[in-house]
Each structure stands twice: as C-alpha cells, then as structure tokens.
Image (cartoon, rainbow, N blue to C red; front, side, top):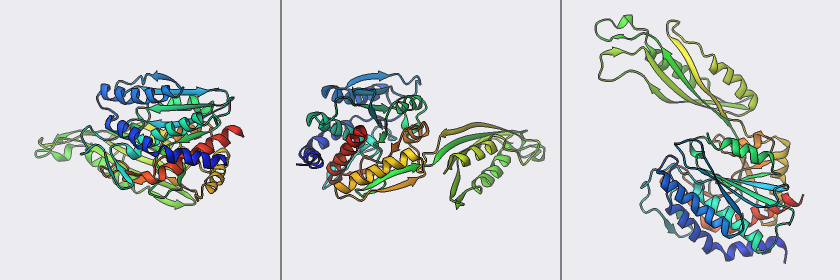
Length: 391
C-alpha cells in the first residue's frame, strides 16, 4: 500500500477522534483579550495533547499584559525541520455562541472552529499520524508555534515566528482555506498598515464664535474622504485599499467645535514596493488647513506575503503535485487579509497558507467547518510535510 493511502486511511480511522478533540478545544473559550485563566486553560490543553505524543512543550511569555502566553512545541531534530503556524485566540467574547458546540450533518459550529482551532487540532492529527506510523525521518523535526495574539496583529508573537521561520525548511500556516472548496489554499496575502492621524487645532464655542475654531474634526473628516479615495484595484497589477476605521473628535453634549481629534485607517498593500511608497506618504501627510497640525503614528505591521517569491512558488508547486495524488486540484488564492504567514514569508522561509479547515463565516457567529474534508486535507498536508523534509 502506498504511503499516501496509509495516511488517508489513518485520518479516516481517526476522524471521530478529531471531532472529539476539536469539541474540547472549542469549549475552552479563548478570546484574545479575555480572562487569563481561560487563555491558560486553552493553551495548557494543547500542551497536554502534544506532550502525550512526544513533543517538548514550553510556555513562551507574551511580554504584553493584554494577552495570554504563547506555546512552543518541538519534536525531533531541529536542524532539519518544518514549522507549523497556528493561534489559539479567537475574536469572540465569551458567551457569543449558544450553544458553544454543535454538529449538524457534515458541519461543525463553534467559536474558533474555523479560525483556527480546527487547524490546530489538524496539526495534532498530522503529527500523531507521522509518529504512530513511524514515517517521520529520524534526522527531521517539527516545530509548532501556537500564539495567543494573532487576532490583534501578533504584536508580541511576531518575533518568535520570524525566529523559527529562519530556522525551518518551510512554514505551513494552518489557517482556514477560503470557502468550502476542498482544494483551497492561500499562496499570498496583502501587507497591512495601520495609521492614526492626530489633529491639533483650536477649539471654540460652537454657538458664540464657531468661526474662531481651527477644527480638528473638519480636518479629519476631509482627510477621511481624501484617504479612502486613494484606493485602487488592479492598476498596473497593483492594488491599494484605504479604509477609515475610527474617527474620534469632540463631545456630542458640549457646545464646542473640537480642535483635536484622531482618525485611524487600515491600509492594505499588494506589494512591498507599494507598501514602502505609501508608508512614506502617510508618515508625511499634510493638513488641508495649515493652522491644524497633523501628527502620524503607526506604520506597516504586516509585510506582504509574496506569491511570486521563488521559495513560496516552489512549495506551492510541490503541494499541487501532492494534492493530485489525493485527487484534489489545489487552487491557491491571494487574499487581502493578513496572517502570521506574512512574517514567515518575509524572512525568506517558503510558506504555504490556508492549509487548515474548509468552511465559511470567519469572524461571524455562523462560523462552521466541513468535517467531510478533514481526513483528505489532513493526509495531503502530512504527505507534503514528508516530501518537504525528504527533499
């Protein structure tokens, strides 16, 4: 029997185990900035799982009091290894789902089932299969870094992903695929910048002498329209989007034209060159009213994940060949949302993303995964890991 068939049989035989473990993980609610005890309970659950199959697990302090701590899990020889990328935090406040866990036919629902506890449990099943079946070469290793702050931008975990990516042959990001298609993958992601523009003007009474004001609110309102109008799609194969996410200025109950305020924008860049060009522009943004001073804070917080990078392309080509063996036509997409794969790719580690669950409604209480896709995709990723390590 071929190795691919053995792996698929293993995944099919252990599909009930996958569902049971995912249910346990989902029931351990873990909002990114939630109760520290809840976050620790979820983190420790994964530590216990991986310890049982021979991994060495270490808690990595987040060094940011807003978040829980991260988890580093390592198996085998670290000189020839691959990196699995995951996170255990979710965007949902505790109690957002009722019930917390539900299976309806071939779909499972629950907070983080799709994004991305399903992918995290899939990593466990892949590793368990390779160990149980004695398929992992003796001179190879696996690192799985599980972070606690991905949903808020990986502020404290980024450096850890970059460190381990530099020491790995490839990074497999177990975030969800896009939609229900069994052969979905993500082969590139836009970069992201977040900028806050602070206006410093002069306030005045809104009834007695509004003309004396140098309004920070008016300035930022004009900037909001101007900045969003910078957006363009597929212009010389480049895309830039600017979205205003928050404008704070003044107080509704005061008869005052506000002098100060702050406007925050979320910017997505399709390339590193575009990111550098517009980052410089935003850092030096000029005010419409010369009597209102603008101050910029923020910058690029996720570099673009470049689909045309030679290492990324080679890994994707290899994945296409592996998928064919399992009867899957792999279809990679470039998406505008970021992940920790942006960081692993940017430091030169060949990266393939979207290898976790299929499903829909990410960051939505309707979030679900397709259980019937799990065994085939798990076997596919397991075989891809082996071919990467054997190369």
